[in-house]
Image (tube, rainbow, N blue to C red; front, side, top):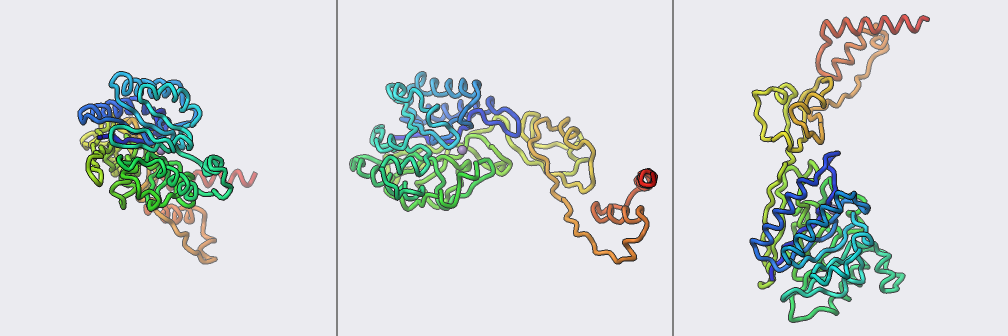
Length: 377
Ligand SMILES: [Mn+2]
């Protein structure tokens, strides 16, 4: 059989305040088009369907429409799990009815032990979990870490392996050795929560969600993060987002990447303020693209964000790339006793690498005089 592996849709997510529903709907249409063109037998969504445990009404309507379209209109089996951003209880509502149309949505660890079979493959659908859930399931107080929990879960899953079938694990966790990006919730990755990939060797493929870059886990050709369909942070600006197609007919399984084209891209521009504002300068962005700007200027610029937004309306981040790191110079007692205007001029020069202009000197003088007058009162 052939299936499509995607994850981390995060429906309802905002990018630095900008709504992404339009972009998410566009990405969904592309995913569906790939699923239909490639004649997949199932679509796997490895968690984080929503961005929040309590998604907004618009997000609920959008995801509902996507799932109805995929499963009821196109009759594609859908295999999904809850991620750490989803509420297992809220997302899991109705899942027993959904199964009647081959929409398998698993939100508890107990359900992961009963595989769903599609064609020649058994799918073990393991939602995001905390160790206590597995401790309760096996009634074993010794289970304290995610790794201990996985050892028990994998043993139980293997007991359900049909040797005539291929075996796929769908899960939402941090696999040891993976790299994270800025859009993932950091408390959930790394350290004690990392699952060693050695534990997962008996699966023919591991369809992971949680990390947002498909390159997050490089060392294992049959254990993959699909990554998110959209770029969710500046650290993902150079990524190509997409989905994996997995063919189970071969051993090992055959994995192919299918890219998605962003409706509105996330682009990093690095340049001086004057260049960025110059209408003669062309940049590879549209008015609707999300832009992170790295300003090369070292001098202060007033209303910089407001002015840049007249040219790039959807700025998500503004950074100074040549920010000077100033080490205050040690002054002699004599130097500290110089007049305030000279001291201010020296300081300004240290910080900006520019001398005060005549106009700035005049302003400084007026301000100092006013301050002195105030102090004497
Ligand atoms: Mn996620």
